Amino acid sequence: MRKQYAAANWKMNLTYQQGAELLKTVLSADLTLNENRLVLFAVPFPYLELANECVHQKKFYFSAAQNCSDKKSGAFTGEVSAEMLKSIDVPYCLVGHSERREHFGETNEILSGKVMICLTYGVTPVFCCGEPLQIREQNFQNDFVKKQLKESLFPLSAEQLLKVVIAYEPVWAIGTGKTASSEQAQEMHAYIRSVLEKQFGREVAQQISIVYGGSVKANNAKELFACGDVDGGLVGGASLNASDFIEIVRALK
Ligand code: PGA
Image 1 (cartoon, helix red, strand yellow):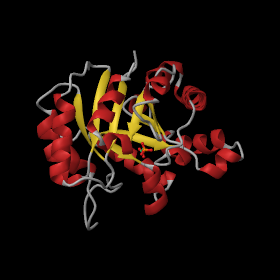
Image 2 (tube, rainbow, N blue to C red):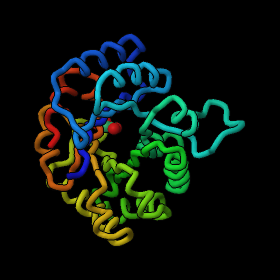
Image 3 (spheres, rainbow, N blue to C red):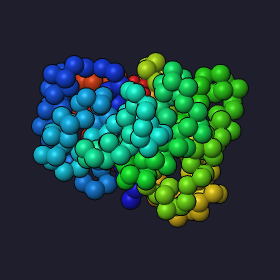
């Protein structure tokens, strides 16, 4: 069975105190997790050590950064490197969230560098892809996502790709309350898997976890996660509310 993930993406929300409270509440809930049913908390950089203190008390919960630099180290004021994340024991990092692509000019090429540097330091990249609304309206979403995968992930070896988690997040569904239907999600996830299969082989493609993101809520998670090629979710807004996020974790396969 592929690993299933419920990943919270707090984005730039919550004070330290609110974050601590939220972590405490989620971690005290009675959730059935195992090696293939995992929870991630992608928190702002200043809260990573707090998240680690909390998740280290239990198995199957992990901290994640929301971004890292594509550079190894050096004069890049304000940036955080993959090596720094590794040195404080952060096992996952979001790479190429659509908000980073849109507001911070992250290109497929830059993101290829970020994926590579994460892998170099043993941090698992959660590589985000997904099309904007006008591309979906023209029905070009497959070509658009294929290009993202090709330019950022095809430079990897099969062995490296096996260490990547993919998040499909249609931009039109992020923070809009307008989620993709389970048919739309399944169709794209199967397509992503077929693209990976052509490049890396069937065995590899079958092992990669592909999570869905974009207005995942307590009331739609079960249906989305039940889709054969959907391996859980990357959750923004609903992850800021403990009881909603707990329900979403319970909806994992
Ligand atoms: P949302 O965000 O759940 O608020 O739509 C998802 C994401 O951006 O990862």
